[in-house]
Length: 615
Ligand SMILES: Cc1cc2nc3c(=O)[nH]c(=O)nc-3n(C[C@H](O)[C@H](O)[C@H](O)COP(=O)(O)OP(=O)(O)OC[C@H]3O[C@@H](n4cnc5c(N)ncnc54)[C@H](O)[C@@H]3O)c2cc1C
Image 1 (tube, rainbow, N blue to C red):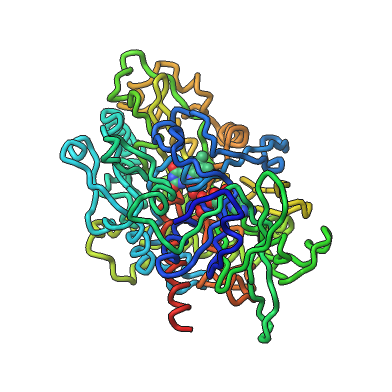
Image 2 (tube, protein in one colour):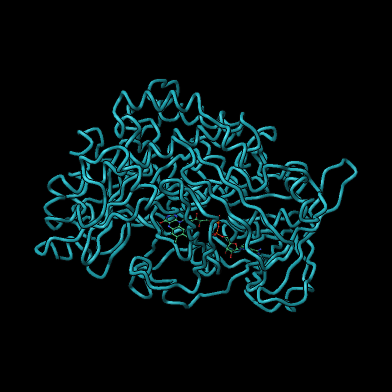
């Protein structure tokens, strides 16, 4: 493998594939393609291989500023009483992309949610087909006996053991007393409906609570935990070296070069590359395919600059249309997070078994209650009706979806996922112990220890608000306009309000309430357990944040519903332009995206290689 920021070392080489963006999915896909082919990865950020802040998994929670971390602002978003506020949207920009700065929480999608993706017209993307790709990427370290004793657990059959991405429980196991107490309190608060799961990644986690595992691996040489970013998984290790792979850092792709084929399909012939700090623009050719993996915030920018997108809009900024695809930059979504939820610690609770000591990791215990667990039967039924008769007017008017049918279809499959337990017409895998939980979770609650507080955060999982990403100039150094449209769907507000209510209930319920100071709930600002609907709604709108899980801006959907890529991840109307990052997900089914995204990259590489073999 060649890793260089020197363009002169690259210009005279020839490449079959160009992968745009050396982030989470980009390096994974490139590694697989480069086994037998020549591949160039172009990454806008730097190679931070020796950077301690990037490599140390505990630096993230300590809040140490990372040289790989960047942000841009969303347009002003929905806030309280008709006001608006701008929210920072974070992303990673160095080798490894966002996997080099993220919280490393290792969650997977569920059986119900992947089947919802398939039901949107995407054969081959259901849970049973998708699980092997997540396993292919994974190198799972089972918990050791002492970790098991302290509450870690796993189901051997659902994991992969020979892939490059390290997935493990932290050593030592973080804050075991808090873990126990968090699980117990969650179960009490959800009336026993949220059960202890042996493994959060079994696909059936709706209604469950367990300890989190992380994208961390144990470095034998250093004898310490290290972040298992995509760079440390698919690029740097000796076993991952590929003679066919060249990685150009500190250079950005401005646009994709295209030509028209005799059949009328567009052919991607290469890319225009420029040093990230500015400089001469160079053309680099790809003889087979261009694969875009610049992340859900940036990939649509590259397509729009290449004339691929909504032709009417592109004309307004004087870009000639190459392909009229109105879905480019639309269907953008993110979970919303409630993180303003830190409760001051009771003085006597200040032990490493509760606070985690130096080894603080975010989200040590995770709970994924279903809609029924969270809302109760009556309100869950009302939610179902709301979903099946969803008002789509707003989303269409702001361009979040290309037409009403697109959002209505998405809402219908979400409704099915929430109530799939009533229609068990499938063969459950052997490890599925409790079939009544074959239903998608509605919200996620997770506990993070701190030295002076304990946080009980929550986020929504399948939002219905839909935003847009648009460039507003042809200048490649300019950020796009990102309008997330957060909490513009009533369904999302219901979910967030329900999550906020459960957070305050947890703070008021023993044994968790005994770990925090007497006035902790009041001091935190989280609405009291007896707060009115209006008060909770106001607090949610005042305090919610982006969950930095951007997905969907080039959705894999039928073209008439605003789809941009086919189930083979080919951009509609092109012969050889693919997208393989978080932007292809039509629904935000990955509660924490990374492990699912490695599955997307593995599947993308597999489909590309199969196409070549059959040519
Ligand atoms: C702070 C933070 C915390 C998170 N916590 C978690 C967590 O705990 N668990 C979890 O599972 N997920 C988490 N996520 C989300 C997860 O990391 C992302 O969803 C995922 O990494 C996105 O992968 P991607 O391949 O789509 O994009 P990225 O990994 O962001 O990769 C995109 C790459 O493309 C490059 N690029 C962009 N534009 C260009 C261009 N024009 N030319 C060349 N290169 C370009 C970027 O520099 C970047 O390296 C978190 C994210 C953030 C930001």
